[in-house]
Image (cartoon, rainbow, N blue to C red; front, side, top):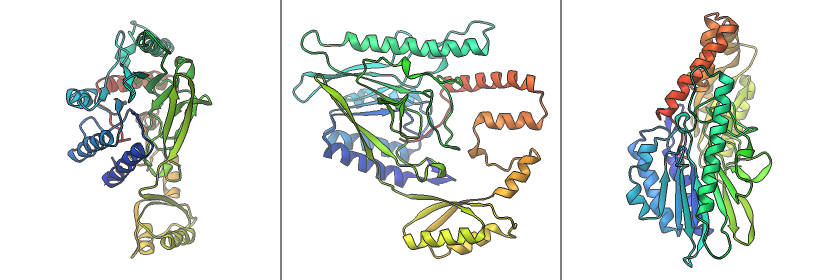
Amino acid sequence: MTLCGRRRDTEAAAFLDWLADVIERESVDLLLVTGDIFDNGTPSARSQTLYYRFLTKAAAAGCRHIIITAGNHDSPAFLEAPHEILEALNIHVVGTAGAGKPGGTFLLDGSDKTPQLIVAAVPFLRDRDIRRSAPGASIGEKASQVREGVRSLYNEAWEAACAMQPSSGPKVPVIITGHLFAAGGKTIEGDGVRDQVAGFIERVGADIFPTDAAYVALGHLHVPQTVAGINTIRYPGSPIPVGFGEAEQRKEVILVTTGSEIPTVVRPVPVPQFRRLATIQGDLLTIRHKIGELRMTGGPVWAEVIYNGSVLPGDLMGEVTGMTEGSEIEVLKVKDIRLVSEALSAYQSCEELEELTETEVFERCMETADIPSEQQERLMATFREVLSAMDSDGTDGGNLS
């Protein structure tokens, strides 16, 4: 994972060490990781080392079971490759799902060897997993097929979980996982999260999840949040800020306590800030003042500077560099809002590619080419299908979380 070209292995390692300590301190029996383990389908050797080192530390910390599901940024084949070795440590990886195979279903025992929990682990669903396109189907019909396909697969997952209930004694709770965009979900501008389900530009409602599930653990969105105000359907969010837009956002992991005869209890645990990110915005005087405040606070900081003054400075980067000289403040990005605004008004965007989604880039291209609005809709529909096909091939990238 990188930010403006800077590796973030130190932050990732610090978070994983902290999480292993939480697992031991809280006597966690099960760890669920709901996708986007890495930032691409072929992670670096360093990222793989952090991943496998953490899994062994979590198991050594007393975590009896670990279940990992693939996200849209992961390579299912890569994650599942070492499954035989990982299963020896009670670490289960679920990369794919589809009709007749709605992910993985696990009946987990407690320390007394009696059944305590069932997990229906559903990974990111790709278009080919859930939809059979009919020739000539409209965009609306395809979206409906996606929604119904997702609903059907989650029904299958629930039925598979119910079939694993012990034949005698009380029923055990069922937890379901997912990696998708739920309707009403909150995002942060520039976080790169696609508004999609199964690679298609679509959202699903909370009603696709079985109401009798003890908990629904979701991945994909970076902002910690519930779905439809339901406390037991949650996104924990990304463990570290993915970009400057998340700099002031509180990160958290979720502790869930459940049992056959007790209601589910959900407790968010704040994640420490392992590296400070800061956005500094204003004219030169304001920027100088805010940098001075960061100097007084101390400690290393990665910052972005957004200049919105009325006077165009001759050397904005040079001015900012002088303000931070001799400090632990490292400015990774400097942006002049006035220049960007002027460029946009002339259809010549100065936005960096990393700040735009694929669809936004395509929209800019159509605007620049003066494509008629009635043709733009058809072209956008075709472009979304291309994105869907790419996701189905597992060619996307993501974050270690």
